[in-house]
Image (cartoon, rainbow, N blue to C red; front, side):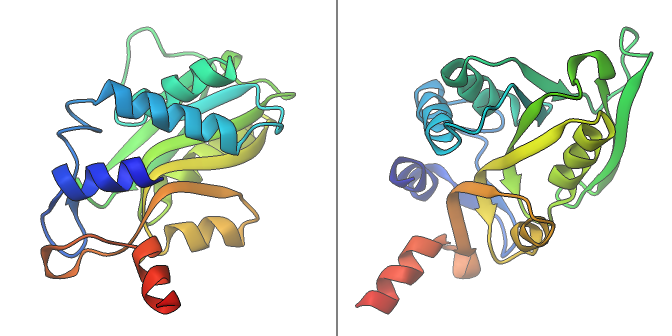
Length: 198
């Protein structure tokens, strides 16, 4: 998605070879117009899949998931990372380790919101090692529902997440695929393809 790639180039900050900071438009301050386009793109890519629910993780996945939910006209459920006084009974849970934050969280969704006949689209802001997406897949499967696919805003293609998910037969649609963050510079898979063509 060219618009997203341009935004990453302009406003993203490469902190090191593994970490890209996008808090000015995606996971702290949110560029609502960009998220609208992201939601529209996910809706187009997964059109015709019969999706009935979107599942994401708080908090960075919520904006793109809600925008996709608007275009697909389906509810959005976000897995909570923190204990809630009101979310206590009959839960779908899974543990996930964040390599960026170096912490493990127990995710929770109220079971009543994911039914056996649901076709679920999972959406998240980043895909690196695939642990968050796998945790959400586990929760959806534990509800007896099916996963129609996984929508990722930014994929770090030099890390194994996308490959791990695809090896499990999961459809992964990433809007921006980063080949490298070397030398403080973002290189996209599309850039690599253009180099090969020339």
